[in-house]
Length: 329
Image 1 (cartoon, one colour):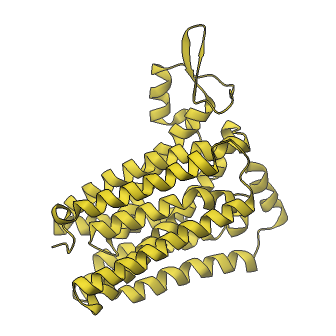
Image 2 (image 1 turned 30 degrees about the horizontal axis):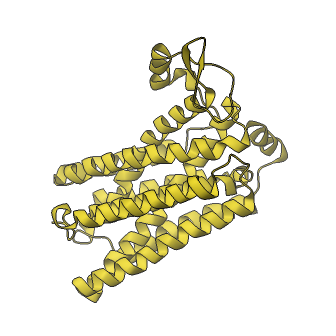
Image 3 (image 1 turned 90 degrees about the vertical axis):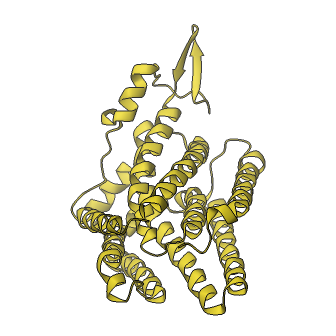
């Protein structure tokens, strides 16, 4: 049984979504009304803003839960949100590798990347809400926990042996289907997703890049949503931590895109995290009477990510490999 049933907390979900859309409107309508190249300084400031908002929400949520239930429950729920947020934020870094490759493949000018990512985030919010709703319903069945856990373990293991250095949008089913419905131009016409020529509407590479990013995010959601259900069974925590992680993804991309190749071992750290949360679902939780200590989970996830980052910096890529990655990005 959830402590925050939707029937009783619909007002919270509604208020939270209003806050999110107000922040996005402020982002696009005020700070990024004109297309421009997002600088590292600007991206760093916005990253700090999104992280600060998530931590403020975490503190207020902890205070509310402690007052409504008891201090111990409030502490546990607060740690679950923090762990879920860090987990989702870490896993979203894998999206950045794809963003770099997609923008390079389609030749998207730097000043239009924010626009593509902005609408990509809107689509991601919708799809994550759908996946979380489905996940919440499925988690009512005990057997689905083991399916999710096994899936995460397999996905984590596969990450050790697969490469994301190449993308082939033309082979994506959704893009191939879209091209049968609407013609596509190979020329970028300002910030427009669609243009009209001789009475015919064409999609531009900006829209195709957006479409590919949305399709990719759906694939990532299949991994990340089950992963956070290994941390908490509360849909409200799953939803809010997911949304905060997604909101910070754009600014994190602009902050890390130029140096993402330096953290080449991070992929393996994320793979270990996926295997851990999978094991948590199928083995560790039952071993600890249904719930592996959330503080231990938080420590393991943070340590794994930090170790992979530190190892990347201590053992940098050889010049030839670094040059290859830089040429791709």
